[in-house]
Image 1: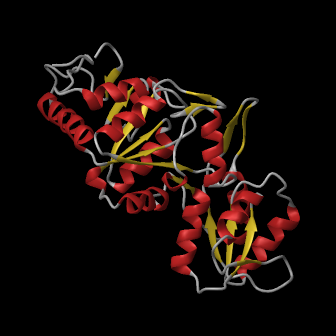
Image 2: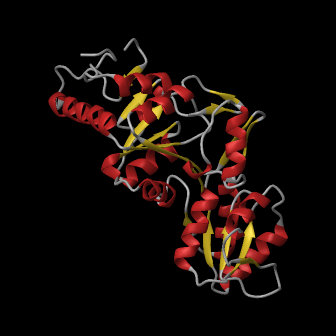
Length: 305
């Protein structure tokens, strides 16, 4: 398969435990090719910025031909699924809205399972998060000083200030549950890394003395919900992402096969030093297409055996 595929375990011949490592690798390839559901991160996996990455259409076609299902799961709570459909369409990637799961939608679903109907929620986040929380639900927004909120939801908020921090602190200390869409410390932009939702969550946590329920990766609620949408178990599902500390860790915590693509944040050097390396490492989406199509297991040099 040329040099697209990079198995997690390099050649282990002659090493102690080589047989066990080879068995783990063979099992990982078997699970990949026999998986029924695939969960993809988006930025760094399907596209970078506003540019699609090579192989996006091919991988979706390969899954469709094999009758496999997929979900696109993102920690981003600022955009709605409909906005993601439009964004992907501008890049020539056509997917239905119901395969996109944002941390905002996953947070809404968590609250629907946790709170009574018609609960008031204090939100720190952008308009897209509010739309996802309040559309088609009986929840309603609570502003500081109006009434006691039953939940405080924190996402990335580009207008976050001390007044919002104070309001969230008071609501949590009065008994509101504290929910974070994600705890990403930084957000990659064309201008470089900027503070992410995690920086705001940390300030609210410090002020209130409480730790939040975290919905997004590397915690499991987001990917657990994606599996439920597809009606598959972890043994039947593959997590595909570009970050070891979020995508891969979430997949492992949820019990899924984890596949790292080297098209985004994490590198081969990161894999070598990671305490929780992925089950498989692939260079890009064309490598994934090749792996799905291959009838024979991969050798440790990346070629077909």
